[in-house]
Length: 255
Image 1 (spheres, one colour):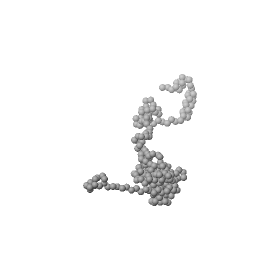
Image 2 (cartoon, rainbow, N blue to C red; image 1 turned 60 degrees about the vertical axis):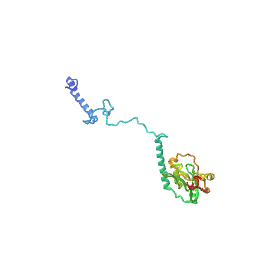
Image 3 (cartoon, rainbow, N blue to C red; image 1 turned 60 degrees about the horizontal axis):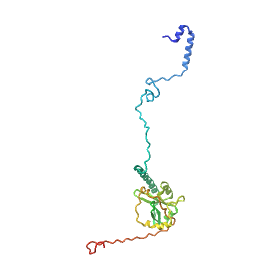
Image 4 (cartoon, rainbow, N blue to C red; image 1 turned 90 degrees about the horizontal axis):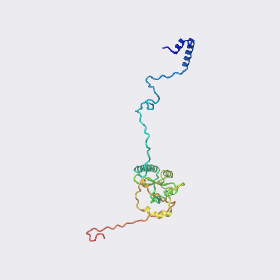
């Protein structure tokens, strides 16, 4: 099959010189074009979405995991639900653990003595510590603070330095029962109220519930003692028990 150039030469429309000049110009233009990378022999022809399910006639890749677009976000449990109660109990146990570890790390031993120092619990009941006068004076001056120590079975009370009391206040304000701080004093009572309620501290003590239960107590709390409160003498209580006569001893039973 003759090319277009051969047909033009045979018809006399172009000369041999013109044909050679045109061939030379085409060779120059072809030399200026950048070389195209050769396609691997095993690669399939097609668009960029071929084989991904994105083009017409393309196959969908079944090996890819489909992404769920209807994922529902997880919300916090509603108050009053069992899940909410479990979450609150978990948080309280974790808080009790932090408070207990902090108190045990900085706790100051109580020096038993004759000076009664009164303070109010979070249940608004008056309690007392029997200390030596020098240690009681340190509490009045703000050199020591009375705080709760949430043990696993009950709440106990301990003495800690001011720095520890401030750390406890940051975690739980209710864990500090008496602290003469220059910024925000905690737990002060008037002398009149101490005298009026002193009998509460002489009543038989019942174990304080752990803080998980105590946190739900009423928020109205009394502050604790004032500086230099006088020691209150405890009234003595005597109980007389009368034995009932045994049957057959000649005395009617119950008399």
